[in-house]
Length: 496
Length: 95
Picture 1 (cartoon, each protein chain N blue to C red):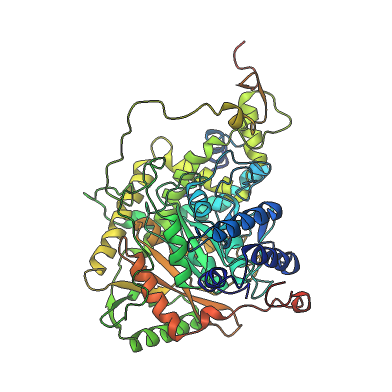
Picture 2 (picture 1 turned 30 degrees about the horizontal axis):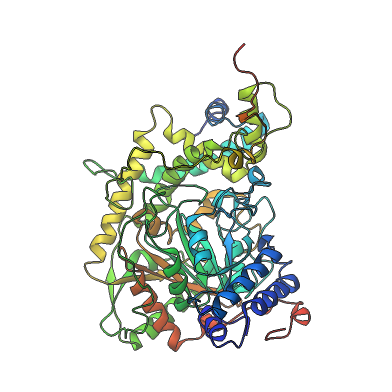
């Protein structure tokens, strides 16, 4: 029972078949038994979680429970949590305790969710494999020799291993969708501006987007309902009427027009991935959808554009880590400049430094037009491609990632090879439109494949509708990994 | 485009990151690969294209010019490496 999706757990809590304290304790025990080899959690707040669970049970007893009251969740360690460590996967913030909650953390707490802990991630959300964490890599629960994807690898692995039913992530270039695909779960990146970035430690501010991981599309809708909303403290947060993202889940797909960009099927993607995507398209056609070929002629440029814009914004955002107001300060230095340089050299890992250097260079005197301005112009061309495509279709479907989970260490020597993992996801950040990955099969090695659904601005409910309908006729989202060699230490199913 | 070791050191100085000569060689190789990737966009004709700085074409909001924050200096300084009497301590910069 405790490994069920959020909607089922909520039913059990509502029917008093289960208390939040029982559920939370059960999951904490499960994390103790199965969690260590995955390295998915950086901080576990056992006592705090049980206190929150007791409060949720009390709220329910008083008749004031909401749809998420008592549901345990985890937050990616890039989101600030008051009184709880927020490391961002970095030595720079190894001992940093946030003085306030991020907006989405606050909203999910107000919805009655029970925060269990903080999840591991690539340092400052820069990476596609979770190997850039100062606190060691996360392992993929489907195969411990493989990466879970990144940068939200800890959240993805925790949900995939059924250690928590839902978790937050952030997506700047694919950091929710790619790990969701590689671990066989659902990951949703909403439209930029729908969820406030307040309290999200900034990487690339024009791209950073908070979102969610869960087992099902329905669960993603429930979590997004709690997280979305206007926040005056984020100047890019949008003021829009409150939306119920679960409202269209049960709509039939008859008449849905699916766009298939020819550039997404042009080779370079593993055969096992393409086979699973094509099988998913067959299911969607059976549900009444039609497919139409579309073209995104500039989408191949999204990776180069991203590696100008994201590092440029990162070099600016990360200048705040100077060893003065928070974070690591070197033990020995000669003067102020030396203190900055040594603190940053010691506090940041190799990938973060590389991106700061790239960003510093492209923004430096004489290079701005050739790089940053040019990238912003090509960003416009890419967004225009999508605008034209949506004149012919409602959603765009393709692979989330060109490969399934790769082996730890396989791409660490070649940053460009690592960057190309995000070839299908980055455009969604450049345009700011919503996108999600849902599981759609396995390759020959038993590793999960994710299909990416992209929609026009503010079409989250439609994406969730397509995903939910697909999940009514398939069971890929119900497949969970058996953690090899650890099955005997599994706590018994059900409540202790 | 290949960056010289002097280029690397100049960028690292601008970025306020100390970098050893050995690290500079390794970093240089990786940055060359990254700039080769970035260079792919230079072939595109972008004459007259309005740069897209943001996902939403909306005006950034202005807020009223009044004090809304409470004094949380102690809380914010509790995470600082070195403070005294409400001040952040840094090495002496003025003789």
